[in-house]
Length: 169
Image (cartoon, rainbow, N blue to C red; front, side, top):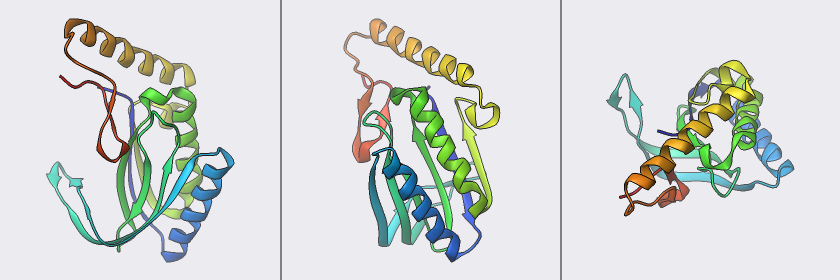
């Protein structure tokens, strides 16, 4: 359950990595979003390809952006092959933040060989703000119903690394 933006792709070249970091940094700072550089010599990234675990260990670089206090961090963390596979849950930050994250991904897309975006709010494919809002409202309504059914549960809850989950029992 939830409204999350999943994305993956490979950049065209090393110059594209620099361009993506610069563009993402400028986009975020123009909105007063928190920004942190990513530069790891030995990162471990959990990934999935063809429904199989496909983890990465090695150097990474990029940028982490926090669009809103109730949104997952947007991690543009690229491996040594210039590949990224990530997700950002925007549901609790609202439609405006979701639309801005999509706007950023659209701005960055030309730097990728291919950028695949799976948007559970359907905004990437439709640009329909009303449809996105309905998805978020439906998820929030279902969450509220579940919390009423299970008085000992809590939600939404922020967990490790700034990620958000709907409900914890």
